[in-house]
Length: 260
Image 1 (cartoon, rainbow, N blue to C red):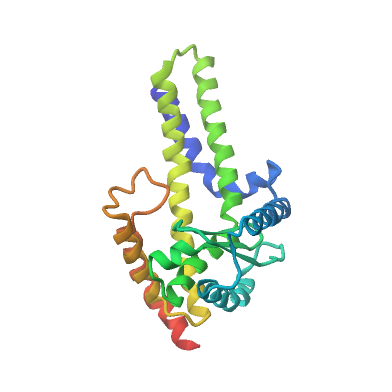
Image 2 (image 1 turned 45 degrees about the horizontal axis):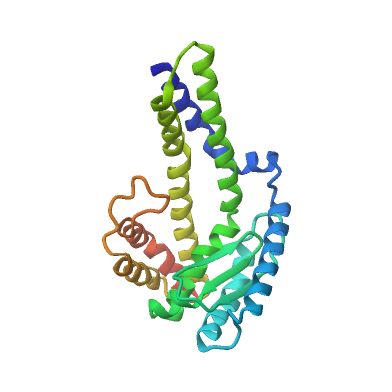
């Protein structure tokens, strides 16, 4: 079992950098993901419109849309995916505190995240820049590759045990699953969140939004979430860790902001 654990650790250590390429081999290439995203976005907006949940006129919509239009050209400058993004925005009437950008530039904001947190336009830009970075760096694609690699780690671990006549049992299976999750899944996801934080900070600065708003945003999130606890088994950094990292990156972002 010790040798099995060492084999798993060695495999997880060498696979993370190839996640995006692995997604391509698994059929989740950029063009395919973007096309699927566009199809899902169209269906979602049609359903929202039919249920009168698509906001296209409120003051909240106008503010979100103004930030979207201002960030979009700078996001295009950052696009190194090899695929042109067809940026679209949908604002949904909902108390849900959420926002995301799907592959290919499909931006979705819930009115609740703006209204419940009483966000300024700069804070809206901090959220949108973060989510746009996820799409621009193709983090969804990378996660697909990471999940495929995680599944391989589990299969290889079980095959190794069977080949060596080991009966690892339920506890052994659980250890393999947890090891692969911590080895690839969770740290990888936390790393992507940190990358999106940094990229979003720089994107909002380029568009002329004050990067300090990213800190005030997460302070508001922290108050909404309450005690954040440990980030060890979380796909996201803790709010306090996130704010601390942003403070470290703030001078670089402010330099960009002040050069405009």
